[in-house]
Amino acid sequence: MLADTAVAPAPGANHAGTDTRKPVRNDWTREEIAALFDLPFTELVFRAAEVHRAHHRAGEVQLCTLLSIKTGGCPEDCGYCSQSVKADSGVEATKLMDVQAVLQAAAQARDSGSKRFCMGAAWRNPKERDMPAIVAMVKGVREMGMETCMTLGMLNDAQASQLADAGLDYYNHNIDTSPERYGEVITTRSFEDRIDTLDRVRAAGINVCSGGIVGMGETRADRVGFVHALATMDHHPESVPVNALVPVKGTVLGDMLADTPLAKIDDIEFVRTVAVARITMPMSMVRLSAGRESMSEATQALCFLAGANSIFTGDKLLTAANAGDDADSAMFARLGLKPMEGEEPLRAQKAGGCGGACG
Image: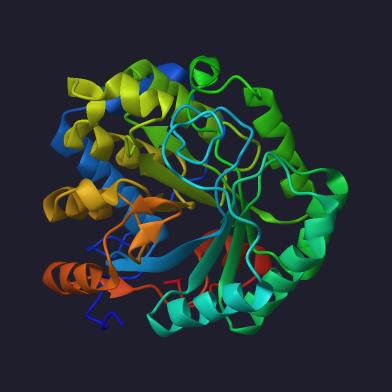
C-alpha cells in the first residue's frame, strides 16, 4: 500500500492566498486550444499547474485498478485493440468472469490501496443475459466502499438505467480521437455512436468517463480536435483518461507504426496533451492511463505537475503491461505524492459537499 506524505495547499488558493478559480467553460474554440498547445512548454505546464491547484489538492493522486472481466472476441475493428477479432494478437476470447472472482479481485485492489475499481468487457454492447451478473458486480464492489466504473461498449437506455439503479459511479466510453480522424481508426461504429452512448449515460445520472488515445500516428491538429470534442460538451466528463498507445503486434496500428518514429508519442507532446486537458476541463479528473509502463518517472512527474491526478496501478491494464504497485509506491515516495482520499471535485459538488477536497 502506498504511504501518505505531506501535500500542498488546498484548492482555490495560490501561495499568496488568492482565489484562482475561474468559471468552467464549454465554449472553447479549436483556435484557442491550438494556441494552448503552441505555448512554450514551461509556460503551458505553469498555467496547467495553476488551474490544477485552483480546483484540486496538488500532490494527491487517485489510485485505480482496471480488471478485464471479459477478454477478447470483440467484433469491433478498433485499430489499436488486441482484443478485436480482427487482430492477430494471440489474445484468446474468454467468457464473462464469475461475480465472486471479480469481487475477490476488487478486494485485493482495495487492500493494495486502490479507491476506484474499473471493470472492462470486450463487447460491442452487453447482452441482456449478462446484465444480472454485471449489476451484481457493481453492487458488490460498492459495498466494499470503492468507487465503481464500467466499460462494456454501447448501451441502450434500459441498460444505462439498470447500471444507474445498481449504483454505478462512472461509465467509461472513450471518444478515442478527433471526430475527423475517428473513421481512420475504427469503421464498425461512428463517432456519433460514441456520443449517443455518452448521452444515455448522462441522462441516466451516471458520471461520464471519456477520453482517448494519443500516439496513434495522429497530428497535433487531431489532438486539438480530441480535446475540443470533450471540452465543448454541455457537461465536461467528470473523468478524462489520457492514454498513450501501447502498440501491440498483430493490431492494425501496432503493425503500421512498428519500427517507425511514430511508434511512441514524444514525451513532451504527451505532457502537453495532459496540460491542455487540465486547462480546458479544470474540474475533471485527468487520468494517466495506458502507456505509463513505458514512461520515465520524469515524464510522469511532469504529467502530475501539469494536472494528471489519477493513475491505474497494478501489473496489467486489460491485456497491456502496466507499472506495478511496488514501482508506483516507490515513485510516490520519491515525488512526495499522496494517494487521494475523499470524493472527487465534480462528484462532491453534485452531492452538495466537498468530500474533503475543499479549501
